[in-house]
Amino acid sequence: MTQELEKYQEQVFEDIKHIDEYGNEYWEARELQKILGYKEWRLFANVIEKAQVSCSRSNNNISTNGFC
Image (cartoon, rainbow, N blue to C red; front, side):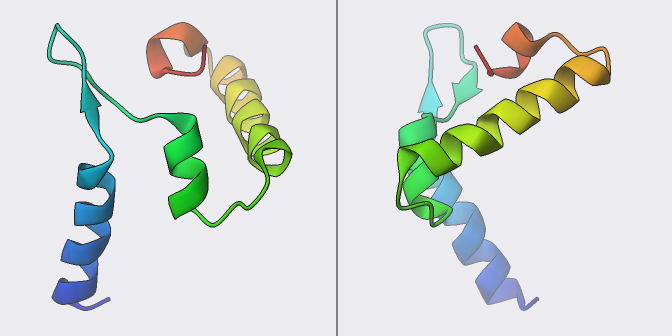
């Protein structure tokens, strides 16, 4: 991957990043859905559900990883 493409990809995520009052970074699922190329919410919701299952199976707290 070229440096220019890598910088572009980083900027795409930076452009939709939000920061809460405590300085925590987060991304809105509906915004991620669009930039990741999912045209329908239901298809992206399946991806989120799989991430939640993987997170739980690896003994990570879903709520602290932004999946609640």
